[in-house]
Amino acid sequence: MSNREGFTSGLMIGATLGSLIGGVLGVVLTSRMSGENLNNQLMEPKKAKNKSNQPDAENMEMARLSLEDKIAQLNQAIDDVRQQLGSVNGNVTPENSESLREDV
Image (cartoon, rainbow, N blue to C red; front, side, top):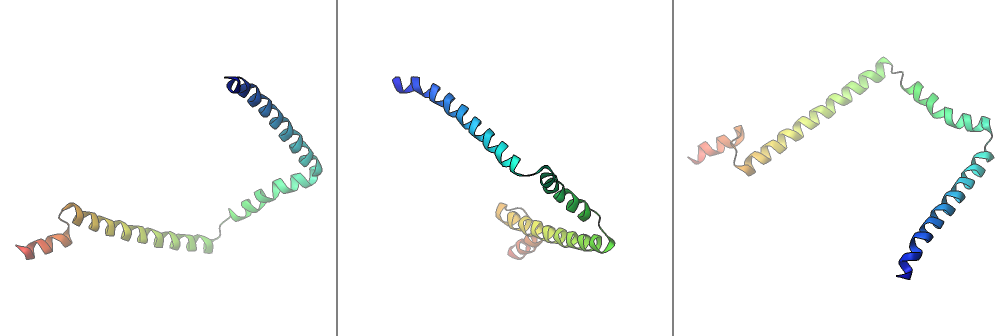
């Protein structure tokens, strides 16, 4: 019983100390960076992202062709799975119906 009684107080002390140490560490690490350096680091990814969001005609065409290729691959995979499931479940698909006619 004494272990359970000490658990709650230990948990509260650990959480309090952990949050204090984390807060102090965050302030110290942030203060090491100058305000200008911090702003530059925060703004650089946004600037680079905005530049890449301006597609030109060549990039658009490449993306379109790539998407068409992926769609064709997905459609082929769906057809393959549909055929496999059709033969497993005993459903008659166009390919299965030919083999059934030959058996009869």
